[in-house]
Image: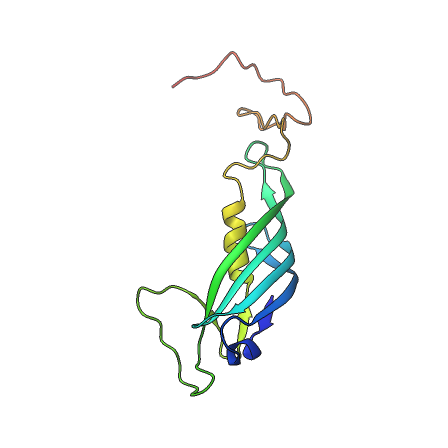
Length: 161
């Protein structure tokens, strides 16, 4: 999800560029990927590029009850400023102050939205996702998926230590 913003960086503040986003990024914990679709508005600011977008993602999750993998759709809105790595006129490297943490426009004047989208998507994910509203989970004794079949464990004999 790379966008060339060299033209925007050469323009005056307020110039806009609307871009379509259609791509995927890797989800490291499961080895799967997450799809992303939507639009992003890139606006030239006095110091860089402001990215504002409304995106839909389809994210792989693991049920917090039965541990089954499933996919869930999320709608996310990103609002981030990207600061240039080099000054286009002088070619000098622009240093950030110690307290500034920002996304950077790389030396080829490309904005990579992947990292911002990944972060916003992770913030949208629930802490304990459920594959179904009435997911019964797994038996804490034998590990049987209670959504598929009932187990033969006796629930009355528990060790309460």
